[in-house]
Length: 337
Image 1: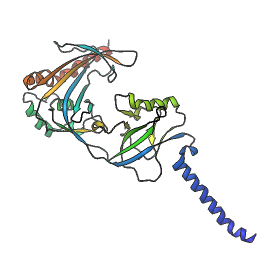
Image 2 (image 1 turned 90 degrees about the horizontal axis):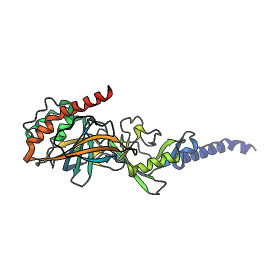
Image 3 (image 1 turned 30 degrees about the vertical axis):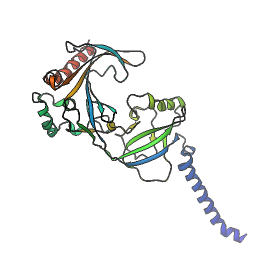
Image 4 (image 1 turned 90 degrees about the vertical axis):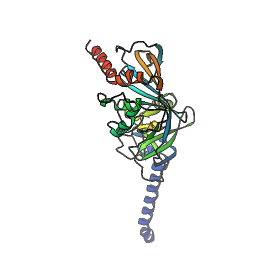
């Protein structure tokens, strides 16, 4: 009995260490949700984190799209055709979008209103970039940026040539790649998160979300992977927040999970490597939304080359301010009607 009393503390310590080890193993490697009343944890496959290796690509085709409010006055002499769009909405009048085909066959779509920490966007360095402006203006000697300083993303895009290079200018250091299994299809879907490089760990990584999220809501998240025109899940407006257990906290700006490692995932800059001017301009006027959340629009296009470059300066670059004023007036008239 005395011997047992002597070893009892050691036995208790050993049992304590055993159960703590079991608890830690179950919490970190099996299912952290076993000990979490509020959250559920979804298994992540093939997780990998690494420093960003910036990408670049040459532009093969350029299309500038100007979106007009339904009440805005549009240019004369255009031939219109109607269409249904899911990528624009009733409040997008006054927006300008750069659509570009890259040399590898991929396409990018960049709104040109303002810059963000994550794509699709141009780098904030282009907002007031005198050096780039000085290099680009000789391409269009009859164009002045004097009254267009607030629209630098638009006129820089508008002065691009076929063959110019778009290259990433990351505002963060790391990319995390991971797979999730779609319960409906049983197939893995690959996601990309940008942010700070997480600390190395041997523990498995999970996606954490609230326990009261329904299966239907989670399935809509998985289905968006194939249905979204955006190419990413916007966690900034997600009513049911999701995050990786490995993610460095306080990553307020890096809220998107991209569905591919596309060039436009990160802010872009322009390198003037092109020599051919060819730009298609699309005028899109909003009409009304339909019952399926698509927007009925009418569109007209015109392609500009060296042969009608002066027309391009007069009709497009020279009327950037007018385009925004027309749409602002239309919105004001509708607002105070």
